[in-house]
Image: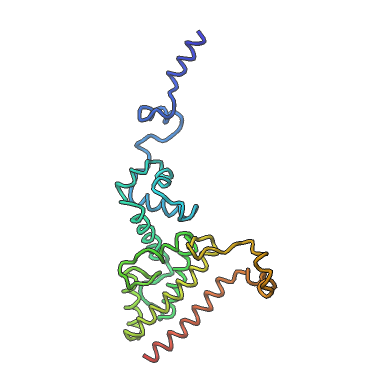
Length: 255
C-alpha cells in the first residue's frame, strides 16, 4: 500500500519542470497564469538591459543573461532585437531620451541662453548619475552622424541646441564653437564622475585601490592622499560650468 500511495503522490503532484503541460500545476502553486504574464516586447527588453547594466555592469551583459532575467530563452529576444550591438544602441537611445522626461530641461531657451545651458547640463548629469555604469555607452556608441559629439549625440537635440543659441544672438560660428565646448566639458567631467561610481571605462579603468606600496616614492601624493580622495564632484561641476558660460559669453560678444 505504501508503494502504491507513493505512486499516487507522484501522479497527482507533477514535477515543476515538465514543460507546458505543467502550466496549471504552477498556477496551483501560486504563480501567474500564462495569460497574466507580461508579454515580451522591444521596450521591455531594453528596460531590462538598462536594469542589468545598472546592477551588474556592462561587461557581463549578454543575450543569454538578459533572457534569464526576463524568464525566456535568449533566442526569443532576437525576434525583437537583432543582436547585442543593436541592443546597446537602443540602451543609449533610452538613456538620452530620459532627458525629455526631466521637467527642468528645456528644448528651447525661455529665460536666456545661460539658463538653457545650465538646465541642459544638469539634466545630462542627472542621467549620468542615474545610470553611471551605462553612461560610457553614450560616449562610445556610434552616433547618428560621425560629426556629432556625445553626450549631445542625437540630430534632434543638436538641432534644438543650435537653433536655441541662434535665437539668443549667437552667430553660426559661435553656436558651433559653443556646441563643441559644451559637449567637451560635459563628456570629460561626467566620464570621470561615473568612473568613480564604478563605471567600466575599459583601458582607462586601471587604478588600483591598494596603492600603498606604489606611493612609497611619491611623498607628496602620499601626504595629500586624503585630500585627493575627497569627492567634490558637484562643486567642480558647478565651477567648471560657470567658467564655460563666461567663456561662451565672450565668444557670443566677439562674434
